Amino acid sequence: TGKKWQHQRKMLTPTFHFNILKHFVVNFNEEAQYLVTLLKEEGKGGPIIKDLQEFLPVHTLNAICETAMGISLRGTGEFEAKYRHAVHDFGRIAIYKVIIAERILFHEQTKGKYLENVEEMDENQIISKETGHDTRAMMLCFALLVFAKHKDVQGRIRNEVNMVMQQNDCKLIIPLLRKLSYLERCLKESLRLYLSVHFIVRYISRYLQLKNYLIPTGSICNINIYNLHRNPNIWKNPDLFDADRFLPKNAKECNLYSFIPFSVGPRNCIDKALNQEIEIR
Image 1: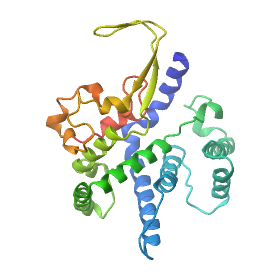
Image 2: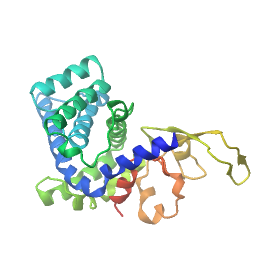
Image 3: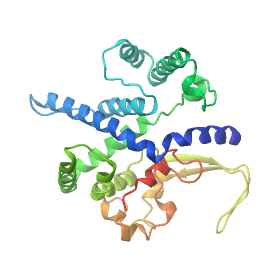
Image 4: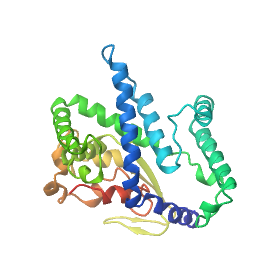
């Protein structure tokens, strides 16, 4: 409901503040290095054959757990064993129950010292059906496949990344993100063509007047983002991969609502505001 959503959104929004991201970059770097290390080990014997849909979610989940929950899943201790058991037997909801149980124990042992400014929540409020790591993993799968299909694009991305990463001993920092302008345009174009979430639904809470139609209160509005992103009336040659669509001079001519991979408005993806804040211009 509206009140329940407003309450939880207000409580969660500070978690995605831009200043917090600066600290998370360390975790992202570590997870990226871990991913690269695994690939290098497998590549010693010849070509690497990986099912991206199985490989990438492991790393996006690791990143989510380290940043949002302060738990590392790469170790070999008792907790990591519980995690692996949860993955094998129950799936991601069980993973979060294991993590939350650990967090509850921690706060009991510290007598709630770190919960002074946090409102009480139960695990059913904390656990959601869509955790964020699934959609990010799918986004990366699509992007990597699109880049591999377009060898010239892949080569140009590699050259840009190599040049930028040499400036800080291959460790990514926020200022360097702003220099990956071509990579950002390619990621946006991949998101335009292949979305993790391509269809959303909205409840119309009051009469909505469009140009030629009046939508009554209580209607259910189905928004097909996939079709919107491939609408030839909005995008020239919509099925063609063209990262230059997102050059600053071209992006200014686009309608705000013509590109909505994270939805738009108050109920958009909760980290959309953060995504906009680090947007490279």
